[in-house]
Length: 385
Image (tube, rainbow, N blue to C red; front, side):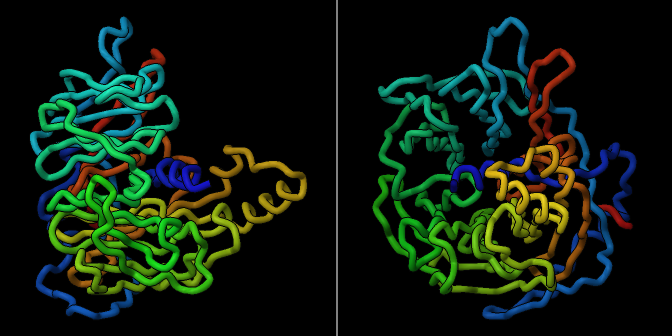
């Protein structure tokens, strides 16, 4: 159940139009960067209003692609992509390349690969998908479908592995902190706390963030971390009853709260028919990128009819009856910079699956007319309305 929620969150992104580099003037962009001079005090609760924001969100293609080759002389790019400090892209979960992690240079050219299926050092299980992380020292961390956590050096040489059951290691709810420890949210491990910090052997260092009454045991929360001593968290994936974003210190203290005015953000008893944050990301300069999945009333009725028949709602119907809200909030001032609503069905075509740590650059996974997959690197842009 939890893995299905995670995969659904990854795929339910929000579509935007494409723009060329000359479509955005630098003077216009400066109007969409928020107000860093208005810092919010510690302990504050700030209401993010619903006034018309000054900017809209568009994507700019960078021209960088990681591409498969027809002769299979190197692995295809995978659906999971991270980027290290040297600009190299590391990918996994390419169909037909089970257990293989592939490295590409900053221009998208294939460099090397490592891993493979097996139980030996540096090998991975064939079950499930792999989750990738890069720490600030460029070590590559891999959590495979067998819940093993493996660590590779910046040169991608195997270092060691351990059980990932204490770490968890799901992409959207896990972050490698600057000191090398792992922050994660998944309260089934400790149903009284949302967050825990462990070392990569699984030894728990601390837990914090009391779980409110009535929240499901699968009260996983999205985590956004760009480095430093704090991170941002969204509401629980199950049971979240308010559009609230919280900044926590790694020391376990709640620093600030942003409360978005959204009367439609209410738990409806099932995750499939309830609104929820499907991606939360923070940049180095304090911009929060939020994607919210919003099922319509028509979808809720279709879901209830399908339940009575003992069936699931077809994906085409889910896409057609679900909205996606894409927002950017300046955490320094609590200002809503952009808020765009679109049909969720466009997500697979336009929106990035994820963004790289601390930046507004991310990637899309697509398939060409020749049937070969490729990864396209895109930048998120804020432009004046």
